[in-house]
Image 1 (cartoon, rainbow, N blue to C red):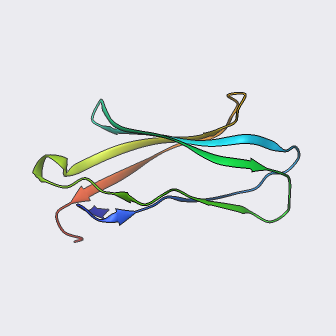
Image 2: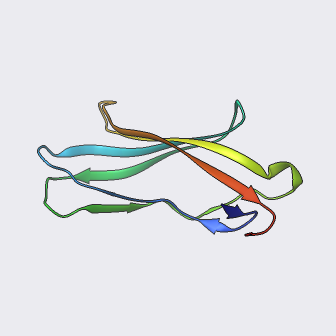
Length: 101
């Protein structure tokens, strides 16, 4: 649940286990109904294997605001590399409302 116009970011923790991951990218498509309303393609970097988790945070974004922007959004996210290998794909949802409650 997000209040319209608020600032937010996505934080992801991940591990690299065997090989170096070169040119890791975070891709995100946001849909309201069947219409894509936002698209992000962010360079995360290159990472070598280690036992501790790596942490990535997207830049701050602002939730949409206004009467027409309120409602449910479906978000499709994935991590890919320079060779277009998909490491992780997932879907999640955001609910934008006028107030927190």
